[in-house]
Amino acid sequence: MIITIDGPAGTGKSTVSRLVADMLGLDFLDTGAMYRAVGLEAIRRRANLEDPRELAYIARLCRIEFDWAQKPPVLLLNGEPVSHLLRSAEVTQAASYVAVVPAIRELMVRQQQRIGREHPDLVTEGRDQGSVVFPGAELKFYLDATPQERARRRVRQLRERGELVDYHEILQGIMTRDHRDSTRTVGPLSVPPDAEKVDTTNMTQEQVVNLIVLRARAKGAAQRP
Image (tube, rainbow, N blue to C red; front, top):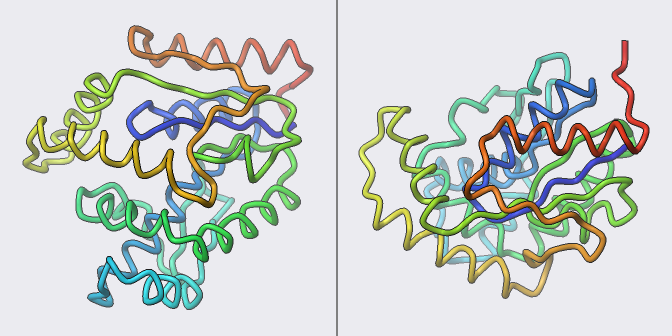
C-alpha cells in the first residue's frame, strides 16, 4: 500500500507521515528532505539561488539516498548523513528556490517513483505525491491549516531548535511560498481529486494520525511483523 500525504508548508506532514508509517509498519519517505538536501548543497557551493540552471546543475551532481535501516530513514547527501541539518531557516529558504526549478522537480519525481518501486509499502509526503508522483496510490490525503496557524507551528519548531525567528516574517514566507507552489508549472501544489482533505487547524497531531491510520486499516493495511 502506498499512502500519499500532501499539503502546504507547516501542516505537520512530515511528523504525521512518520507516525502513520510507524503505526502501520510501512516505510516513510520525506520528499521535502530531498529538495532541502539540494538546497543545502547549493548553500555549501555558494550558488546563486536565483539561477535555475546553476541549481539544476548542482542537483544533477548530488547523490541523494536514504539509509532505510534507520527509523526514520536518514538522508545521505553524497554519502554524508545530513537529516539533522535540513530544517534550519537558511536551508528552508534555499529549498524554496530549488523546488520551483522544473528540471529539479522532474529529477526528484523520477527518484521518488524509483523509491516507490523498491519500497511498495510506503507513506510518502510532499506537495505533489498524490497528483504527480503516485497518482495510483491506494490512499491519498491533503493536510491543510490556516497560514496563521502554520506560521505559529513553524515558529515554535524553529525556536525549539534554538533559532531566533520572527512570526511575521515566517507568516509572509509561508504565504509567498503557497503562491509560488500553487502557480508553478511543474508539480504545482494542488488537492488530488481523489484525496481526502483534512483541515488540521484545530486538530491535534494525534487526531490527524489516528484518522489516517483508521482509513488505512479500513482499506486493508495491516502492520507488518
